[in-house]
Length: 510
Image 1 (cartoon, rainbow, N blue to C red):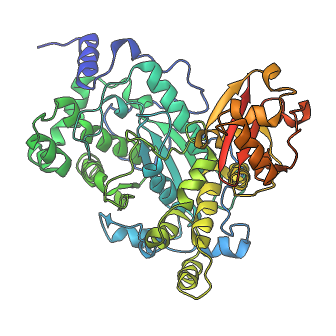
Image 2 (cartoon, rainbow, N blue to C red):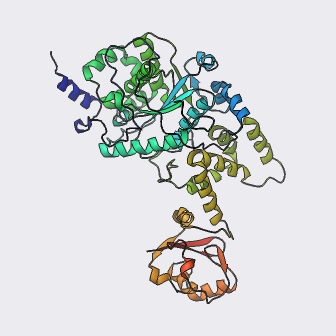
């Protein structure tokens, strides 16, 4: 039965949960973020190393590693190390599809490796950080890396580790999420492994919507679907669990592994990518890709590597749907709160986190572990190092300094000179209120402390003042007669009142 191109395209929309109105390219996306790659479902050429002339290198960012990468000798030593051995030593290796990958990583020619990130939220979260770190390790060991944004696969939803089908995203949300994640990944990885500007194309960001948007259903079934074995697809752990559940699994979700598998095929064929990495829950999707490459292109040399999931102490994954998710974007979680999370990691987990989340040498981590067991060890010293290293990697030097400044501002008895940004950085963690400028200016500190809710009564405020326990912007106030002056209002926007060393209130000037 003849089927028109329009009918086939419409069928593709239904199959992959595409909104027909959104089949045009993402019109508002920045062109430098998402290279326009040519569709590749025409007969597959057998050249596995051909490069698309449209791939784009992202603008470089300053180095965000504080782990000694400014040492040229250390950089050279790392670039000669076998990345698989490095990952295994640090507890970042779960499985590889073939031991040949270890040999390929030592060949000296360098591989190209990718990790996928579906834009299902506006920011990546701590659970995604391991993928970024493993990509970074490949780069530091002399390989080229690709971050693949799932502009197409996010419309379908990965069933791996999910008990319910993911809600469908509208186009505006998908665009916003994609741009946000691209900015985050580029900020962290958009640099060469030695911290210099990435002018050699060693890291790029691609979007799989660029090749999926023109795929026709009949072409896909003919070129890819015929090689997919239903028994193998059903046997995937993520599929088996969903099929056994009360809700079951939609056909849309069932196709996800083929979409991700084809992504690997496309990147292998057109971008010279020979390694896909992902969390251990991605094993089935990754092997779907290596199988398609072997069957369709009749070529070997495609590898998969998985790393253990980053788990909470109760064994559950770090997700983005639970309250208190540890986001990687500073617009969703301040560098201060990000830093504080790692500062509060229990001693029992600290060494494991230092190994998997930082680039400190194993010898240095072992020394930290020995220090923790020695008499006179200062509590939280290891936590402070972890927090500094991870915050620097994710948020850069500016983010780390912001976090340190805010941390110092909340330290009991701190005398840090505060600015508006620092106070705002801690506002979510202490009580706050809004008062007009006229209500605050010339108001006595006694009256303001009651008005802002810091003290229950004026008499209690006076007693505290006499005892030397009242602070304005971290400066001790000794007299009852103190009134708020214009220069007391930090940057004309906020005040920080403290009763004793721990009770604080942020007063925003409206």
